[in-house]
Length: 86
Image (cartoon, rainbow, N blue to C red; front, side):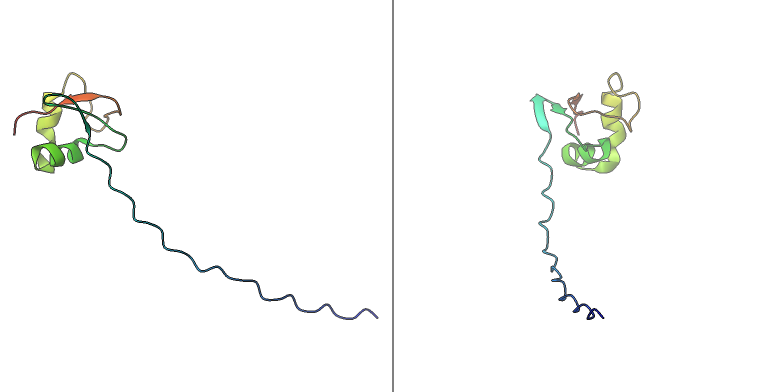
């Protein structure tokens, strides 16, 4: 009769290594005085916080760019947006 197979050695369990924290996105690229270029992941909320000092001022940013931004939820990388005065 065949002998029973020896138990397999215990598998090595890898210890997870911590991942680096995501780096914050760089500030949007200025295209001209009073303008910025939208980068991937930007929102009017974030741009208003960065350039107008308050994310709640996103409607001012939308209004200043109404011709280029019909829907405030849809801005696209590469768009040049005008930053209104604070």
